[in-house]
Length: 177
Image (cartoon, rainbow, N blue to C red; front, side, top):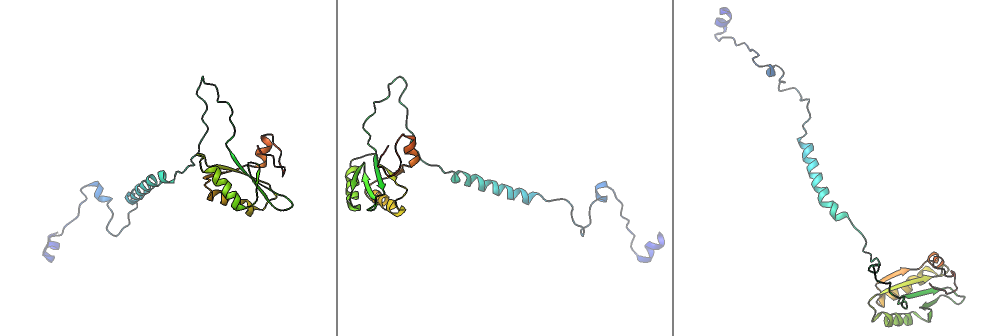
């Protein structure tokens, strides 16, 4: 050994493995085999925050007014005269016949004026539309547009099935529930 040290002038260093973990430490050129999960956790936290913010905004519903039952122990109120307004559009050989509560209307202007008179003082601005299946769709929509212009806020549709279930006669007969 003395020859090797004197020939070069420097003592030769020998590397000894002192700790067991140094024996398994990869060199700088080798790839790591474990997964770095820190970026995955960051992405998951961002997605969680986004979903927490968006979820309450995505919930939508419809506002409905359900009828309330009378309080217990109180008799139900007597049936009063109906304040519902029904717009009927029936088919006839001379063309569609429009009527409000079984009273015929000649023109759309007269329909507009009659509905304005009816809904001027009413708090409940609901109109029910009953149309024959033979009437053109555009004529029914035109009557509904006139009703909206006259102050109607809500429009309900009365179907033939609803009339049958109520015990009425369907068809162009003009019978209303």
